[in-house]
Length: 203
Image (tube, rainbow, N blue to C red; front, side, top):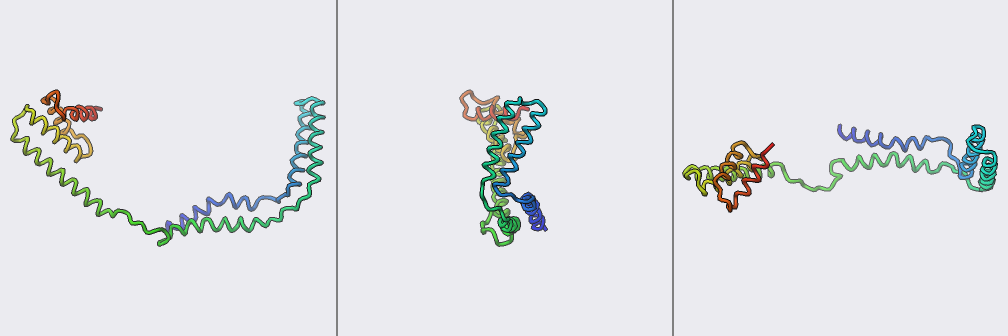
């Protein structure tokens, strides 16, 4: 069903070309030039009547337009016979069909994408590795005296692992970052991590 919708949309988008096809009678170059200059003469007459231009300006402008009118009248050119309409009809039909054909089964190059099952297995493996790391860090911290440098370092690493596992800084991770920075030495390598994550968690 979606292919029918796509074909219909393509035909709708080609509608402007269809309007161009059913446009009025085509003129050759001479006829178009004559029509233009006659319209300019009519406009000059209206401007003079409305007093938008003075009589001397009107006379000079009318003389110039009449000169162009005579030049256009001398053009000898074969009138357009509308032969290009057949090409236009073919274009209106061919473009939607060609676009539709690109989406038919087997019409596009066979470029396999990464299977969802494979991506899911990779995500599950990464999460399982994080879970093992979190469990290991919790076990180490459980046997570590509080308010020590080792505990501060372990708390920073555990908080980072928890944030990565959740995809955001959880309340538990934030509490661990704060506890870690409170006991971290001034030159501790993980102190900047604590400060950065605490700042990121602030509303």
